[in-house]
Length: 88
Image (cartoon, rainbow, N blue to C red):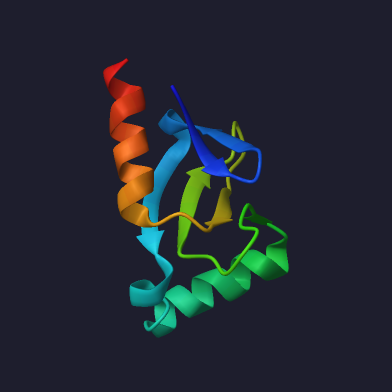
């Protein structure tokens, strides 16, 4: 199934590695390092029209890397949408 994460961006739920809260996780040095490294690699896609509340890490189809989507929706909202799409 697919998950709409905002700003006309839809991702396959099978590709999702994790959904993370930006406020809580960016306190960690490891998370900041991951996001900085992802940005340098060009693997961050901004799907937020405003300040991102969450980010979604996905496997890139057939490639040996991840893609990180910045999203303005809360992680709880994304998880609810994901759960509803998996029930269909």
